[in-house]
Length: 436
Length: 169
Image 1 (cartoon, rainbow over the protein chains, first blue to last red):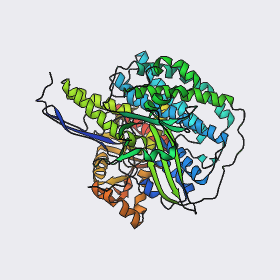
Image 2: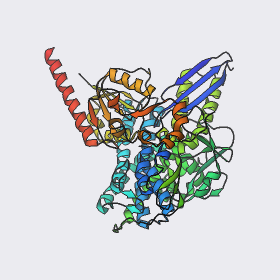
Image 3: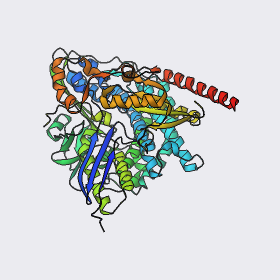
Image 4: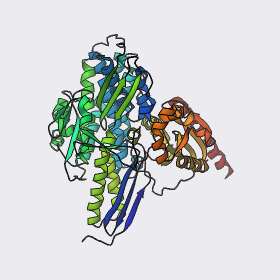
């Protein structure tokens, strides 16, 4: 029976094993949650103000510094916005190389989350570094952690020059093109890590964690025929197809007075973006080899179990491996191409890609002299903030009703937050708010 | 210093790119470092059970200082560490986290409500404006080779200290 006399406070100052800083405060009195605040506590660097007045061509490498984890996502989303503004159509080779750069990010970033942040929870460990070297399964998983991340890292370095803040991708193309032999050398390494991801998928598929939120949720993300993360139209779980430029009409910004970031709803519904949304909406577009190898897991999608975001990320790593392997295998030459350049005009450019954690949206207003007049950036963790706080509330409420210990409640909250894979550095870039 | 080097890794206002580079360096160097380093504080790698700062041989600190609370925490880290290394451009130079220091009066007016509500410092500071920094690893993200050189330096010092200490027993 539910213990109505229970009083406690939970104050998590710095939630660990997530990207960036977030905190959580919960006040429970007589078995009822009186207050719950999930706070993004990153200190702002005001990027959307900082880009004002700067030449639009200088913006992509600057905004890449919004986030070290997914810097190449910011780089490519911003490049797309600038190219749309300048009416530049990137070449087929440029798009292919961007996809490869991006698959490297997906492998590295999802692997960081799954192995380093989420996996210790499955084994009841504090850290992946605490895995038992004498236990074969744990020993192998620790080795997998580093080898998988390394291959993703390597792919990004070969194509982009660096895995973080890649210096070579630019507006209209690449400042320096990658070496074909370096790319071919990665093929065997991609195949080496493939079995490790099959194992990882199986581990997360067997995770019994199951939590669904009440109320309507709209899962939202870009859909493209090759599941490339970089192209396509926005698809929602209720079957709507939306053009990138029209996204703003559906997003309802939610001011969260105690948080350094803004949240969002979608047409009044709770909104969720990221791997779970992509798998729910677009699994038929995964690489054919990925679909063949993950058939038993794909049947779980569409899913409302928030912990399935982990499994969805593991499947996306496999897709990134299979897609990269095919693209590189089919490459016979790198055509020498200089970046395309165009004269500026007064216009608005919108760029949108699927960052590892979900849709990333850039809107830039540019003057006829090519100067940024105004910029707006909507990041995945901001879009997920409202549903994340609501999910934490419902989880805590259900655990109180089961008379769970505070220790268990804290552990379950942290697992749930990690399943969202939030990125606080992204979330707190800038917002203009009139505080009450 | 003796035995394993006790390491702390901390992030203030920045994009945490150097943290990512550090986790990528672990791909190659973890087998070499695992018997030589002990990660006392590293939010990205483990949960701190106590929430208290422990004594460290080296604190690696990335990011710039945006608030009084950050300044206070940085000073506590300095007190608890024998060596403090500034990691990456924001920690070493303040940039680009400090870009608001160079905003026009109109831009500052626009962000004023946020600065006031969340009690930001008037200016964003690099680490050396707050505490004594022993070594710097510049770069955005940090220069990996300089980081590895500094790590090697302290591992050698630690080994020599341990040998000397053993010799005295």
